[in-house]
Length: 410
Image (tube, rainbow, N blue to C red; front, side, top):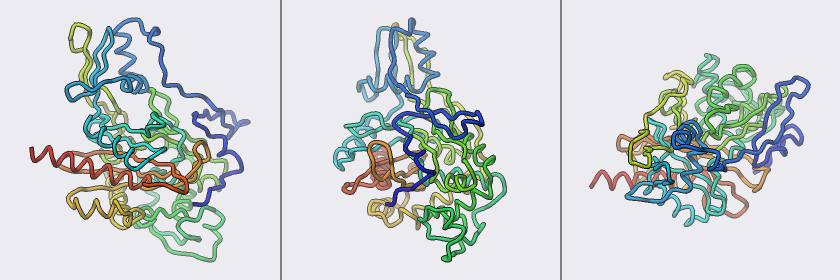
């Protein structure tokens, strides 16, 4: 896979840390590294109610305590002198996925699953050697950003599934100058361009949408948010029209985490409504009194139901005949479980921070047995690997179906 050259050396400035974009026009495009810590000093929280309040308003604190939880009576539970916390994560699904990561020798990868109807976290799995990748928010979004571009175009009325352009270059071309000037020109529509991840179509679509619209909807989907201690994606404003085209095609300086990717998929699966993700099921005090019980919470209406359904249609096409349709485990998934509804968006881009390699995403949803799940899968692979980031999603989906089929029979 060719490494994308994006505006000189700016992409090299991304690291394991987040960045802050300065609004000062004199510093436009300047990126400052800023460490994101998920460690906490327990002495900072003096009472059980202070701890509960922090827990409910800070996702990173939920994650920090989840990592300390133990399995008790079929639930992940954390105890201290003040609180007992029961987590939403499904232990059976979590443990099966952890075993699959080990079996397929996934050295650098992550998988997140959310209940799309509630926002509960059902699984959060990282490679054993790198245990916190689900909250690392500096992975390149790659072509998963086309979800944002497509939603912006549809929601603003600028384009629809059958809107077509004559574009230059092959689908995987990474140069806006080629998209505009190549002698190889093909008529492409949005739905097929989404399914096959056509860079020329989405780059040209981005310039038609315009910077203001694209940034507005990227922010609605959560990019550059700073609340709730959640690992939101990060982006900077395009420097010019060339840079805007790259961004719209998923080749620009947009970075995100597996948790945020799963939340984007949830928003599409949940009819355009973003729910607040949570790891907390229940909280009790030291006397056994119930202090908190999970209730789903709406964060925002991001796009209309009509727009969400059209994005879902294109995500289904991606699996049916698009970029992942001929992948081994997706073929096996469709053959063995024809009643499973699954869709998503693939993305591939070279990762220029540690570890270097192909950053492979599959961000999507599945529906089975009355359950609706939003998920993201990621693997950063070198020249030798056992499972792609796309097929990790298919393997996890098979495990989910098997687990829920067993429950249904019982």
